[in-house]
Figure (cartoon, rainbow, N blue to C red):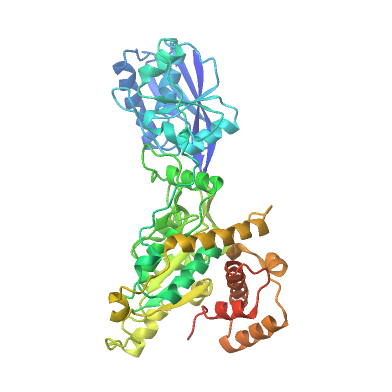
Length: 506
C-alpha cells in the first residue's frame, strides 16, 4: 500500500514542500530503505522511527518498506522527517486511516515516541499557508512559534500516539492559539542607557545619527574611553520593529536554531558581537550545509566588531557586498542562496597596537612602522563604506565624578529617532528602501536637493578631503539624516557641515 505525507525543507530562508512517499510491499525480503538525497541524520531516522513506533504500541510492518523524499534532487537534512516518515508507515501499513485533510508534519522522534524541537518551524508554517495546507502537526515545544501565522491550524503534539488518538476522534488535540501580545510593541529595556554614560556628547550624537539613518559607525579611541559601552547603548535608541521585520528576523533565528524554545516572535533588535577570531563562514555564512552567519543574525540590528583591525583581512573583505547591498548571496556546487544582511555596523579599535597614541595620560610605545601596519589592516574600501568616523576621547575625572552632569536618556533620544524614521518611511513609501543609508543615486537626486551654498561647500570638501564618489554620496545621505532629526525638509549647509565632520581624517 502507498501513502503520501507532506513535509518541508528549508532553502535559504524559505520553505520547500517535500512529499514523503511510503510504500509497504509484501514482496521481497523485509527491509527499510530511505531514498531522495538524505543526509546522515535522515538515514538514522530508520532506527528512531522503528523503535518509536513499537514503543507507542503500534507494529512496525515486517515487509519491504521504501520511503522516497521528493523532489529527489533536493538534499534532505536533519531529523525533522522522523514524524512524517512514521505517520506514512502507519498509514501505508493499514494501522492508521488515511488523512481526510491536507496536513503537514514535521518533528524529530525520541525512542519513546515523544517529539523533540526542530529548526525552521516558522518557515514551514508560512509554507503550509502559502500552499493551502490547512493543518500543521509539530512538536509541542514549537507550537507558539508557528501560532503567529494566521489562518492555519497548528496542532502541537507531545508524542506519536497522540496523533493516532486525534485522527481517530478519541482525544482531539487543541490547536495552538497565538498570544495577544505577540504583535504588541514591547518596551525595550536597553542594556546601557545613554544617561548612564558620562560625557561623550560628540559620540552620542553620532549614535543618534547612526540609529536614525542606519549609518555604519567607526569608533576609535584609547582603551577605557567607553567605545564598547557606547556600542551596547545603540540598540536602546533604535526604532520599533514592524511586524514584517519581526517575522523576517524570527525566520533567520529559527533556521539557525538561535530562537529560544517556547518563544515566538522576536520584537527586540539584535546585538551581535562576534570575537575577532571568527572565521569567514561564521561571519557571512556558508559552509557545507549553507547556513546564515553573523551578518544575517544581526539583520535589522547591530553588528559590533570590537578590535576591528584584529579581524582577519579576508573576513573583513567579505563584508563589502552585504554592507553595500544589504544582502549576501552564497553560491556552492550544491546550489545558491541569498540571505538578508541589512545590519548597522559598529566597529571599534584603538589608534595603535598599544592603544595610547595621542593620549595625554600615557605615552605611546609603538614604533612608526608598527602603527602604520596596524592601521593598514583595515583596507581603504572597507573604511570608505563606513559613514561615521568618530574619535572617542577619554572622559576626565571631573565628569566621571560629577553628580550635576545629567545626560539625556535613551528613551528621549529614541523618541526623536522614531519620529525621523517615520518621516523616512513616508518618503520611501512604495519602495523597498527603509532608511536613508539604503538610498541609491536615483533617490539621492530626488530627495536630497542641494542649494547653491551646499554645493559650494561640498565641492570644497571633495577637494580638501580627497573624497571618493562613494564618500561624496555618503556625506549627502548623512546630511539628509541630520536634516530629518532637525525636522527640516531641505538640507542646509549646517547639516552638510556636520556630516563632513564624521568623514575620516588622516
